[in-house]
Length: 96
Image 1 (spheres, helix red, strand yellow):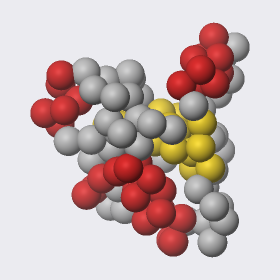
Image 2: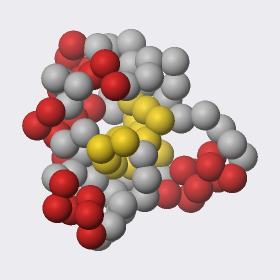
Image 3: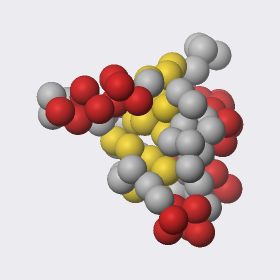
Image 4: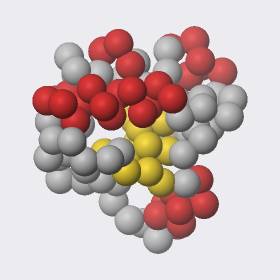
């Protein structure tokens, strides 16, 4: 299995400013997302494999959570069954 790719917050901001196409996925729970989020679609970690059809295989997919741990777990789970997806973990998460 290839190593998990990552992206840091400054690069993600740069991608947004440059209008680089990517898909952003929040893997936290609903109550966490209600407090704060940085956008994207919401697919909690426990539902990620059931809702894989919501991920765009044509784009880099950036997954995020609070610290970057759950998003890394989500990527590991997805890579096992969908190794062709371009999955990136937001390094350090969003910190909230």
